[in-house]
Every structure is written in structure tokens, then in C-alpha cells.
Length: 99
Image 1 (cartoon, rainbow, N blue to C red):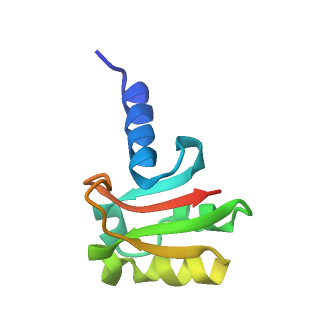
Image 2: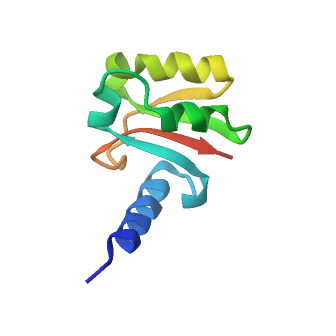
């Protein structure tokens, strides 16, 4: 049996691999539902303010709901990127990554 922490680490490693990122490059990840929720998730806001934040990847089908994050990324000087890749983890809506 895999512990939740170990499973979460494995999922993050797979997600990062699918995005062409290394796990330690992922600052924060939101699910589709978290992107769709009202308001801005404070974890994303905090991650975008970190000097090492370089890219924010947003699932294409969530562009309308996630536009609030797109604007926030631009304001923070972080490159927003729309992603629609079959390898993108099925329940990942947004990722903030460092170089």
C-alpha cells in the first residue's frame, strides 16, 4: 500500500514529466474544479509572486474560467501558457512552474 504522501509525490512526478517539467519545478498545481471556483486561490497568488516563478500553464478548456489567473500571471511578469496535451494529467487545470 502506498501512503498518501508517497502517492502524491508520484503523481506530481508524473504530472511534471507529462508537462516536460521536473517535479521540483512545480510550485503549485490546481485541479480543474479549483480553477473553476470563484475567487483566486491564494496558493497561486503566492506562487506567482515568487521570483523563481517563470511559467503558468493553463488547460485550454479552462481558459474562460481561468482568465483571472492569466491576468494575475501577466501582472506578476510570469509567462502564461495555454496547454492542451493528451499527456496533461486529467485533473490538472493549472500549474505554476519555475525554470
